[in-house]
Length: 318
Image (cartoon, rainbow, N blue to C red; front, side, top):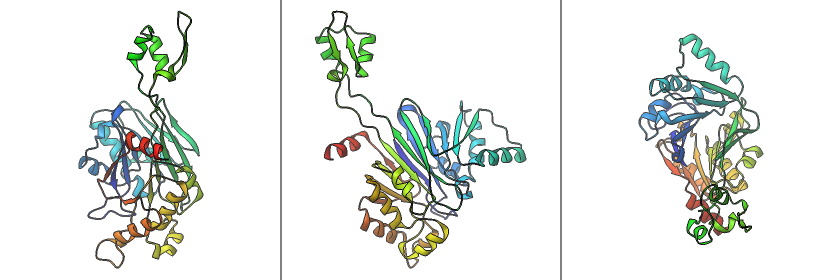
């Protein structure tokens, strides 16, 4: 599971930071899930290693322009780039109405199915490998945070041991690999768990923006491997954060600390902290690390991989 930041600025793009979008790449299934799609996102994709043809799901946090203005253009380009079989879009109320209006006034017609799902708190997607949940955040318009949870997988099935035990190959191996208890034709009862290695622990990724500090974000991020959280303002500008319902760097760190996450990646920075100003991005990082040391600051095209090995190592240490 790889996270690539396509835009890390808040409100407006700058020369070095585009507005909000994150691509989560799932190499094992050749899919990309996009979180938010600010203006210029498809240009950012072209400058990255993300393949536009692999986008299958798009999750929108809220309807502010810096999170949705690039969506219609991206959807139109997806059809021209390889005719995807289907794209599912998840987001708040009015998202479908917005896209229909864009299509109507621009005379844009998709050559592939596009399904818009209006999300409610709780489970919004699930298949055999992943589930996605959302929860309301605290912002000026309805906004949601999202959590991807990968399901645990059985450990490696020991084929050699099964053969030595005289277990006939075929469908029985599949059942044993799923750690079922199987009765063999000769009457022996075999527990598949005895033939499998340690369970591969599923990975988790949480995305919270835009929001001020809230308990819902803490609960959504509980024990996550990676939390991506907005940090629009420095601690010194907390009053602005309260007025505009955005987070400071210290609020993001407090969410990470209270949720017990393994890593915090901050994003969605106000351009007011660009190099040369009285407070710079590096100061926001120091503020957050004073509360939650395992914090990094995202920049455009920054990629972080959540590896199974790292997750399992952390679980063993715990």
